[in-house]
Length: 212
Image 1 (cartoon, rainbow, N blue to C red):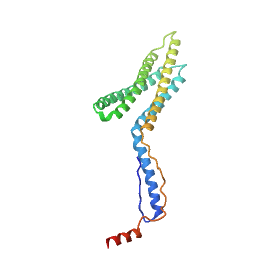
Image 2: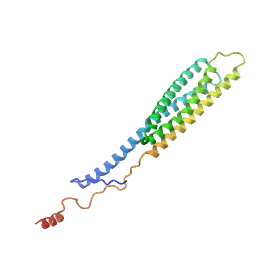
Image 3: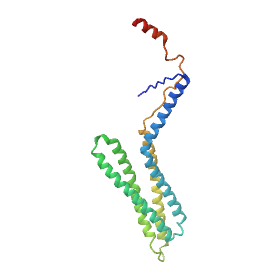
Image 4: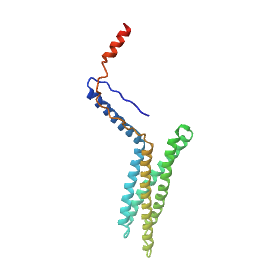
């Protein structure tokens, strides 16, 4: 759909400048409005990526000499992440249930369902990590060093899987934003007209002759 913008002003250069600036403002506003629906999701995923990077670094540092304090710290972090994901899952499921009854909201329904499908595997991995951390937090007994090291490596692998999933989810959100954002472009740059639009004396004379 093409929109023609006409600006009338006593200064020809100013009228052209106003037209070009208004088009740029329209383009910027369109991008802001359309991207806003994805901003919160992107920020949430980016925060999760930062958290998982910190946890991977911590687990890698402690892989050879785990301490009960370190395990408890990670366990609390994982508990918080599980709670946040479960809350988002609950909210998405309620929203999906409401949207299912509205035939006009199918696009938003598909978006929420896609987000739910992204979260559920990540939640499952966090729950597996929590189970591993519970085992790691138990008192050390003689001869279980190899088992604990294996458990820690398994937990680290799960962290890395979550990290990869989150990166994929972030790219999917960004791709969806690009695909679903209407593209507004300026077809032609406004230029200074060669002759004024008004007044048009010849036309006025002709009209006066007909009327007279």
